[in-house]
Image 1 (tube, helix red, strand yellow):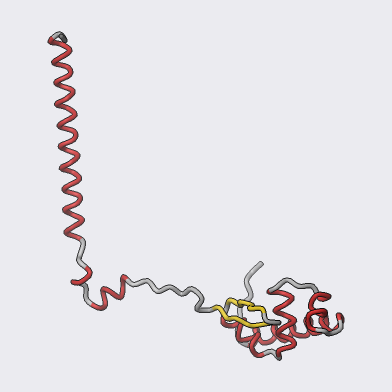
Image 2 (cartoon, rainbow, N blue to C red):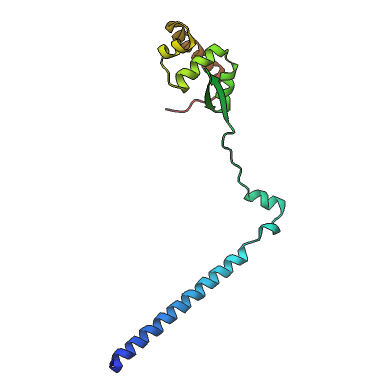
Length: 144
């Protein structure tokens, strides 16, 4: 059997633990009650309040798909997609194959059945046209 000193210390510690737990439970209940006061059920919200809580996903909104040789090529950005759509198909195919599918001039010439030099010239001329179109449309180039 424990002596009275150890028993008293154990009882004091037990009482301390109970008091700490009760106080913590009271704090949690008070915090929960204050949160409940601040919350409002969704069915009680007005239309404008409900609209403020809405989140609109804009995934795929500015993505445009071009098809080259049966392959889909996704272009992100409305201005760039509009610029590419303005190009004749042959020029657009060279740009898409080169910059979006990562093909070399030789690979492009084999796929499109045109001379290698034609691919190179067509790409350079088309890049100049794209640049002029984008400048005319007010596109701002990022600082590098």
